[in-house]
Length: 633
Image (tube, rainbow, N blue to C red):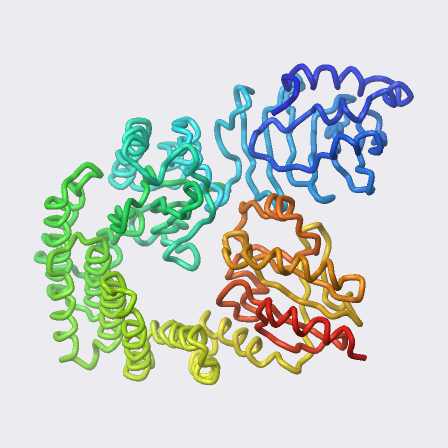
C-alpha cells in the first residue's frame, strides 16, 4: 500500500514533473519510492533503507524520470505517455525487468488501469470508479483467472469473484445459444450466497488459503466449433480446471470447473468449490457437454423417428438438473440422456451419424461415472464394448470405449488401493496400456497410451524399457503430440557424452544461452515454484554455488511455472542468485518438450567442454562431481 493516498501522491508528483528540468532535480528518491502500485498484490524491487541515498534519478523527456538502484538497474519509470506534459504512466521493476504498470488515462491524478507483465503474469485490469479495486479485466489468462477466484473465496470478496465469472454480456459476445446461456446464467447469478456457504463449511477455504497453481484434465484448451450448435462462433474452453492451493502449509484443491475464453480474458462458468476430504463431486461443465444439433447429421433425410428422439433429447436437456439438484435427480437425468443417445444412434441410417451419436453416448457415460453420478455406468460401457466387437467396421468406436473403461478402472483401483497394493495397480496399468496399444494400433488413443507406458517405466527406473516405448511412438505416430514429447525424452536420456544446446528467454530480459558459459562447469536445473523437492534441495544447491562459483561453477535455471505464478517473489524470498530461462507453457513449454521433461527437479550437469556428464543428477551427485570436474583440464 502507498505511504500516502495515491491521489495525493500523484497530485504532488504532477507539480514536480511540470516544473523545468532543473527544478525537477529537487525530487527526492524517497518521494519517488512513496508512490506505490495501485494494486496490493504486486512484488516490486525496493531498495533497503541504507541504499536509498545511493539511488539516482535521471529525467526522461520533458516531464518524466527514471529511478536507478545503486547497482544501476531501473527501479521506477514514470513518464508522460501521450506527450501532453503530464505524467500518466507509472512503471515498476523487479531485477531490472518491468513487471507492473499503472495508468492515469483521464488525467485526474487517479489510477484507472493496471497491468501485470513479464514475470508477474499478463493481467490488464480496469478500475472504472478509481477506488483501487479492479472492476473488470481487459486481459487475463486462465491461470490468473483461477487465482483471482481463489483469492475471492479466501477473502469472501464477491466483487472480485464477479470479475472472473462469465456475464450475460459475455455470453452475448460469444453468441451462445439462449437455452445454454440461460443455464450458465443460472449457475452464476448468486455468487455471494454460494460463496458464504462455502466459507462457512470449508476446511480448504480459509483467510490463509493461497493459490499455488493451475491444473486441468486437459493438456490444452479445446475448441468447440460453431457447427456444434452451442454458439454462432467457435468457443475455446478448458474443462475440469482445478486450482491447487496452500492451506497453512497443507495442499488442497479447489474445483474451478469449466472456463471459456472471451476475447483476451478467461471466465468461469460456475462458482468454484473446494474439494473436501477424499471425495470429488465435480459438476460437469455445460459447454463441453454434448448437445443436440440436428444440423450435424450427415444424412439429408432425417426420419420421423429420429426427429422425435432428438426433440425428446432437447426437452430433457432443457430441464437438466441445477446445481442445487440432489444426487438422485442427477442420476436419473444422466441415465435418461445416455439411453436417448443410444436410441438415436440405433435409429439413424448413415454410418457417420451412428458413430457420432454412439461416441457421444460413450463419452457421456464415462464422464458421469467418473463423477459418481451414473449407477451401473461401467456395466453399460461393458455392454457397449461387447456389442461393438461384433462389427469390424466399429473398430474405432471399440477402441474408444475400451480406453475410456480402462481409465475408469485404473482411477477406481488407484483410489481404493492401500500403500501395499498401489505397486500392483501400477503394474496392471502398464500391462493394460501395452495390451491396448498392441490390440488397437490405429486408435487415436494409442500414442497417449504408449507415452504413459514409457513415462511410467522411466519413473520406475527402467530407462531401457522407457526408450523402447519412446522410440515406438516416434516410429508409429511421428506426427502426434506424444511423438514430440517422446523425441525430447529420448534426447534427454541419451545426452550423456553429448554436447548440449539450450537457449531461451531470460526472466531478467533478453536471451540466455549456454554458449555464454564456455570453460565453466554448469548445472542446468529445470524447476518450478510448486515443486516441493526443488525447494527442499535449494539450500544445499545454494551452498554448493557459494563454495564453487569463483572456481568456475555456474547454475542456469529453467523455470517451468505457468503464467501468473509468483516466480519473482520466490526468487527474491529464497535469494536465488543465478539466472533463469522462462518460456510460457509450463511442462508444455518449448524447453520442456525439447528435452521431454517429466519430473522436477531435473538437473543436467555439464563439464568445461560443454559435454553432458549426467542428464539426471541428484544433489548428492552434484556435491561429489562438481569439485572433480572443476579440477579437470
